[in-house]
Image 1: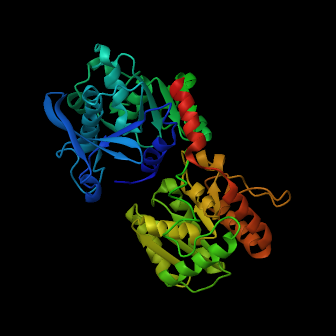
Image 2 (image 1 turned 120 degrees about the vertical axis):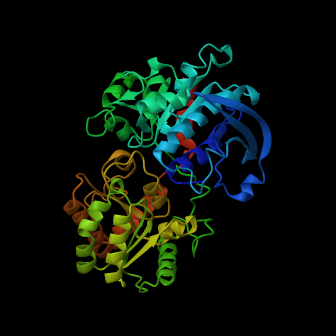
Image 3 (image 1 turned 180 degrees about the vertical axis):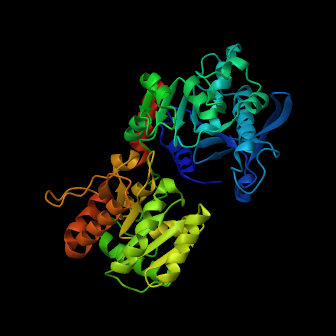
Length: 464
């Protein structure tokens, strides 16, 4: 059911807590698009009905164990049907109001009363709201604390105020400017941030950026107000899933000691698979991304023709997104068949191949709360080229040619010329100072982006 980085976090993080100290369980919707091999393993636990405004909706709870973690799934075919987890905001605001309330209604049936409910993004923003309003008079819920994590402030779950009041059944005093109301609309993410006991973001730079007018998406005043309860924990990546020494998707497995040879073999494999010229010494630039302005595609399209026309380079990009970006990339690729390939869609296996085969990985994001791709790239010895924003600033140290330090190449302003010159500078190091490039690659593979340290930080916050 994965659509992005949120799945990486909620799928990986729970396994890394000390099981002697913490009983961590995960509850999520039972989407119809779940792979059948998993649905066959689910066991029915119970069912009940959720009052949602004037509606009364069925909720079934199913469960399974996966890698030592208990997972619960909220079942309702009306809300969770379809080929994708998300459809449109009109449907989704009701769907996630139902889910948020069902989570709380389910707790007495689970024989498990949590000390902390850790909520992620706007889809669960109403959990703290319901807990502190509708459920506040029930002693069963009295000791539960909530943490609300913001993975991307851009997406807030905003919809027509009167309709959200009707859908949720929440009391009118919740829909005021100091709570859920936001410029005439209801805002789920704002509700989570107002009512949660603690707020976290996924990198230290992003925690600062959301308090600014430029990065606060209209909520910077609220984050200033709640600054004493605002924390940052940088995301990790799953070192079991992303390990070039054991990865079965790549052509040749490798570690830090044989990374240069390993990456050369994988580059040859990807070039052959995609029909690119087998040029071992040509720099291969990779990108796995949603095709949106947030990910810097406006900058890329501004410079791409010049880069391909004037440079000795190959470029492979995979992802889905807005039609205008997909069509423009395909058009350019059709005119540079010896240098560029565009893969519209997403394949986990192919993503691993691109990480392993590429010499450099491109992430010129407009904003990036944390970013996982640059960490995955470094894990595979793929040198990141990034814009200095959010988690990209925190995780990528700019290369210093005089001190021979750094883990990648970066630029400060959201400017196409800066991006182009940064890519050219990286290419200069690759072609003219190959030993220095190989040392950057080695430093990348020595970085620790595992969930171990992130889990320790979350554990401290849970206890606090």
